[in-house]
Image (tube, rainbow, N blue to C red; front, side, top):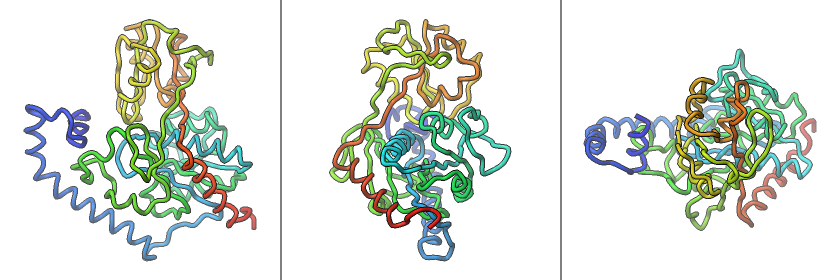
Length: 344
């Protein structure tokens, strides 16, 4: 099913029965897509016109989101933002819905040893990677209020562009540069959460891979040395032989292509659904196809409790082009100066 949806949304490999199914489903999915658009626009208009009141935090709120369903590099951008703001002497905190986790209560404060079953993989990754306060809650304002108790002076949200109940100061949209916007239809006929016109209203557009338009910052994910999931030891990716690669992210082929660019030719590549939980036995069986199992950092945070000695992950860092990278940080600092200190 996931492969069919991918082909339908991005118009790839629509052949034979898949092509027939696509055209049979069109009359059903098109009106649902139109209805989705009506409801989406109505929801946003309720907040933009003041019919519903959005929560306004006493500190700046920066949204890192997208208009398409699925992963496209938002979390690496959040990590980049956190690191840049820390270098400026600011005290950022991160809020997330916590997709894939089921906390005993909300809002939930993410600790460095919080399990992904509780908080979700991306919040745990951000917390472990950056060390800054992270909170999760389906209602983002609840997570923001919790973070305000932890001495933060700026909030970054991982996703949440369409969560209009939280007022924001700056919006960054991350675009998958390879798949772009697919067939440009709204869900469920296409991958769009909002129409492409929404892009004209955000502050910055960041194109992850592919070819960026003139108004977009370019971005790529720079890999570093492999890190052993169990021991923390490091090694060059090219030094491993007989590698089995796996990726449970929004677009697994991107990770496999990164490994190939590093000179790693996996004996097997296993894609998984985004946010999919793993069991020790499933990955143990997969790893037995080679000598080493290599995964993404997002996968690794789910595997720490049961990792084996020959399991590795590949950390990546977002690299954003200039002058746009500096412009993003400059605008955030300018907004922060207008707010002053949280206690003011």
